[in-house]
Amino acid sequence: MFAAALRDKLPLLFAAVNLALLAWMLAGLRHTNHDDIYFEIVANDPQLSWPDFTLWAAMLQQRTTHLFNIPISMMGVKIGSSWYSEWVYQAQLLGTGILAFLTLRRLVGETVAAGWLSFTCGTFAIHAYFTAPPGYPVIGLASPGLFLISIYFLLRHFDHPTRTSLAVSVLSSMVAVAWPEYDFIIFTIPIIGLVAWKTSGARRRRLLAVYVTAWLVAAAFYASGKLFFPPGADAGRVTPSFHLLPWGQTFLALWLKAILPFGLADGIILPQQLIPGAPALPAVVSFGTLGRSMMSDPSFVAAFLAWASGFWMVLRRVSAHREPLWALIVMGMVFLVIPLAVVSLSAAYQWMVLAGYIQGHLSSAAAQVGFATVVFAGCAMAAGRWRSNLLRAALSALLAAVCVLSLGYNLLMRDVMAANQQRWQAFHLLAQAVPSGARISAPTFWGRNGVSSIPTNLPPGMSNYWTEWSRIMEGRPLNVRPAGEAPESGDVIAAYAPSPSGSPLVLLKDAQGLALLSRAPRDLRGWPHPDWDCTSICRLRLPEGSSFEDGEKWLWPAYGGPRRLWGRLTLDRSGAFGRMP
Image 1 (tube, one colour):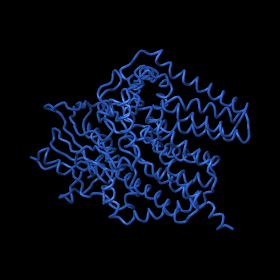
Image 2 (cartoon, rainbow, N blue to C red):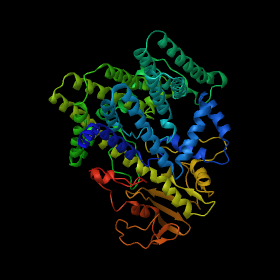
Image 3 (cartoon, one colour):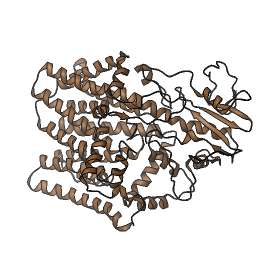
Image 4 (cartoon, helix red, strand yellow):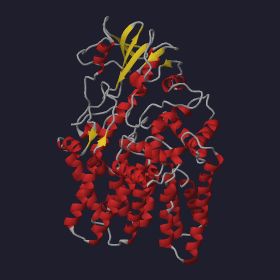
């Protein structure tokens, strides 16, 4: 009896493993998005008034909704700076996945819901050119979570009508649609569809009237920004451009990059700061890149077989009822197309995307969920209609192949993000090693990795980013020269290099000469037993007469990091990274 009960729950276990894998892949990733970097320093500045900044941001983009989502963002990023941030983020991520499963289970049954969650988590690509949700530890999942709550309680209301369930659903939906702009479409169409499908007559009209009234209130609140606020410097983000050609080009560019198989066919540009210690990755990631990487490691074959077995187990239990699967496909198409189509209407984003400044957007996450939904629901429908073991095997292999492809890609992206994250650890070492008030020239700290770029424009009254970071986050007043400004006599010169171990090296040139800084003593390439002096931090003085260029040679790590799948999956989540096989 226990064995039979366990077999019945195997799809659920399969989904839980995939959700946990996605959570583990995202664990520890921070400073991956320019907005994340910007809001962290703003949220932690004790001299900055949150109400004043909120009003300034709302006026800058003519977005009334910023009056509440900016404080939520700042609170979320402030939590992201705390020791418990990872617990909050992981709980929110896992909670969103569980809520999505529970909601879909009411609509399509437990087996299909478990298979959908497995495939969506297994194929979610952690793109380096947009980072949702890790760029926003709290607010990134707030709107999807509210949407799922509204759907869940609406389905409960269909089965057991109560005012409480309807009120929770309507209020959650009203807040969820407020921002980003495309949420007003993708979070309303599924509710309209469900009401039209599950109800009729006067009940249908009453429910639609209640929801539409709530949405109109949210829409009026959003649109009021154009009335209350004069056009700000960044108002182009919410100013539509209806020129068909640039809209189509922008949509196609964003869509191709969002959906991993199409992005790999087109070639995904991987902008990386070229400094010692950075992961040795190709400038363009393609099918060939990943194929050569994965074929040299038999562990990927084992991963493929595990995924294929899991999807076989799911597809052989799918019933022949197609109506719920059609609803799932329609919902997937809405998420796949509309968010990127809406973003592509923005005059500002048309300019940025077509100029090559960004390859993706936060809406790419919604497009990925839509793609996974359409593909899995289509496979489930085919498996339920033509109950052939050969067909199930082929479909299971297809779903598993996309998951393995995403796993190989995500390992590369995680290496880039983890290496970039060490920049803030390196600056902490630098801030502890120089006296207060020091003037510092550190060009490598200003480098760009994808959309993880250091802000050049801060709120009025602030200096440049690293000068403010040293004051706010390090508690030490330092004068860091802006990017591109030449050093002068008396400056402290610094450079950093990430390390696969997760602990960066800093090269420092001050009045006492050249030194390397580290969190702990370590061997160096060609210098196996250096004499580190470790007090609060570890410092290694380089031989007298060494030039800064000589010192940069010691920044190259002695160890390149793990190459195999298991070693890369089990890396420490505080900045460690591996390398391609």
